[in-house]
Length: 420
Image (cartoon, rainbow, N blue to C red; front, side, top):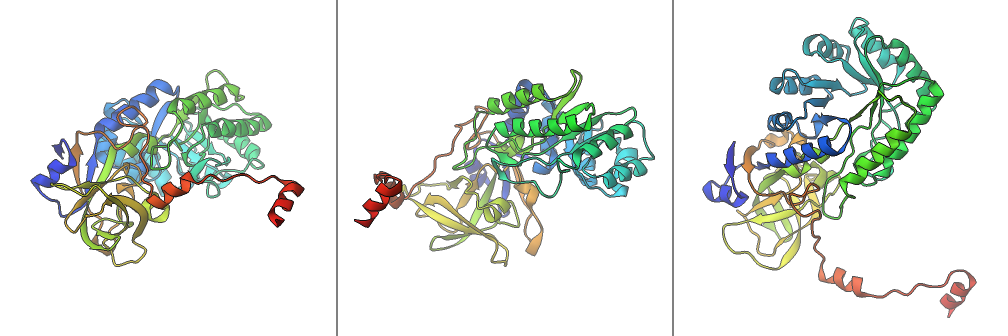
């Protein structure tokens, strides 16, 4: 990978034909250090957030040597970088072959489950191995998260005690634990504490001793209009919740950050192939790195990358990707200089998580180049850049904010006033 000080340096050297993932490994290192220094837990990186080999290597170099994997492909990826990394197969539903190969070929000993059938499958596929670490995925509330991950996985509170007891009896020389997920991009630190209290009640009802409490992922990053609380509030809430749980002094605390470790570390450099009014047609889109910009309508931060002056006036634009599918549309709005034109490049920031990880080969598109950047990310929760991303307001929005609205009295007094 070539290294550049700024994205403009890359454009000046060789205007790229394909989208370019602009990566900032230092951002990953700083985030990894924060989790290790401030959260009293074993850190398992959720590989699904960004399965790039450079991310895995950067984390290993920074001291994160444990990984939450969800497939054989992710297991093989991590093993290709680190032969002795700790791997936890945390997908609650796995094929028998995947379990067998993970255990016998790759040394995986930790498996997640949320049903009696999956428990039996794991035991059968590993030949009733004695050294299994079995983690029960619990269903918890996802209030306060941008993405609710409840519904698909997790044993319900009513069914949890029986499953916890069955897993406790199945574990021999290994460890038994519980895990949960409060939802992706969780904006409320106390959600972790509330989930731990809920899980704790199930543990008490089951009357079992757990060796591991895994608080999962959900740790947030910064996006326009979304500025999470200070990360220390998340650590404090988790520590309080752990101290209040019915667990022993030897119980281990685990976490599975994904987005919070890598979101700041990458942006995407796209080219404008055509402009139609307020619509910009790019060489990347929803089948590439901009899945969330399409399906969740997240207004990722953008910058014009042009070797020359640009208009001071910013206007809202919508994006279209390169495929023939009309769903390949990112409504934004994305504010860019009014004179943006074909051939210009746009940097779309905060795409280190679920950016290149979501790319497909649909319509023959999806491939991208990689270049290392030495500059700071567009925003940072770890002191590398401002904690917030300024939002642009139109003149109409600014005028609306200046209007003073008087509150109306409630009850009969308010009804009388409305009749006048």
